[in-house]
Length: 111
Image (tube, rainbow, N blue to C red):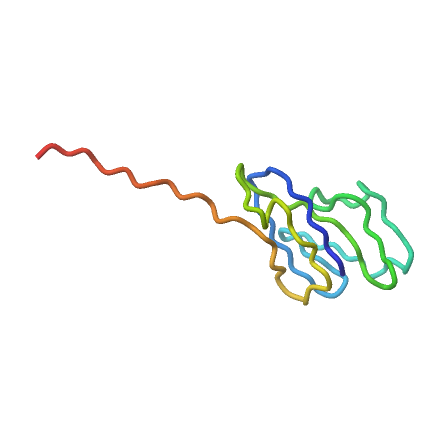
């Protein structure tokens, strides 16, 4: 499976678990097991806002693109992500930035 990532400014998160030719995206299962070699599912025909563009099987391998959510100031790793080529089964290492923490504000107490 080859998974390309398309950065998009969003406040929600992305969790993807791979099992062969199946992906569980934020809890919803999408199976591409029955997609024959050379076939394409056109963009927009899969009921998933995370999958953008077509899903294809090329030389036996599924190719697709997922939205990669990021905050207002993404790191270079998130803004320009590297495709995941043949990732192992299990939770995918999707690039992300740690949320910014609010600085602690000291209480102004008169002694």
